[in-house]
Image 1 (cartoon, one colour):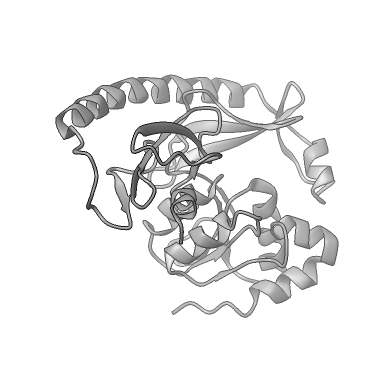
Image 2 (cartoon, helix red, strand yellow):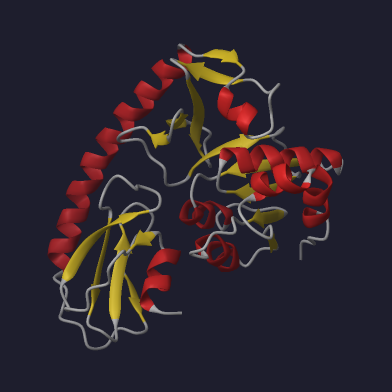
Amino acid sequence: MNFIDYASVHGLQIDRLQGDNCWHRVKTSDKPHKRNGCYIFDGSRGALKNWATMESFATWPDRDSYEPVDWAKVEAARKKSEVETANKHSAAAKAAGELLRQCVLEKHQYLDKKGFPDALGLVLDGKLLIPMRDYRTNTLSSVQSIGDDKRFMYGGRTKGSVFVIGKKTQTCQKWFVEGYATGLSVAAALNEMKRTAEVWVCFSASNLKYVATRVGGERYVVADNDASMVGQKAAESTQLPWVMPPEGDANDYHQSAGIWKLVSLLRPLKYV
């Protein structure tokens, strides 16, 4: 695995790798509208951090030959950032609650496009809103809005935030996916299989890895098949049983091949 692939597993989007042994800020898959990742690379070794999902820096392939990092400054910046981020998260959660209270439960063009014309969703001003909740406490943290494009609420917490499809029980299976439409298709396939299961929509590959490795029980991952292989790498890193459609995501496969092909894809997975 090269440094760019290693960075992508942690959610960093490096369009042009600079091997000048200087720190660079880059966008991340979980916060694509911000430069929330940083890296340093000297041509043979590198270090990086995703500020939203990582508690410490990761190095590739080892810790030798770097200019010393002033960890005192890093820690001071981290603490300041934590306070600012907590305030943004709190404001976003409150705003998310206000938006959801104004929603109407109705059909939406996105659901129709994704093969669920009769499904109902929370709609406000023509946009489908997906509640995002803390995976541990179920506390509302943010919303994802889907209209002409997909957007996360400014200041909303994505790390550890999920949307769960299906009845929650202590013993049921948990299936982890990235996107909402993918989750709907996986849930439909599991229903055909008569499985008592929850589908956890994690909104990104890096958050899928974060959440799936922090909960217990019988767990499975359905990865997106993307050209960057980010979905596959995240699935592999969980060390859980996982599967991936021949191309695209599970919703793409559902629509192109039919529900029973998706069922056939999921059914062989066994939990060890």
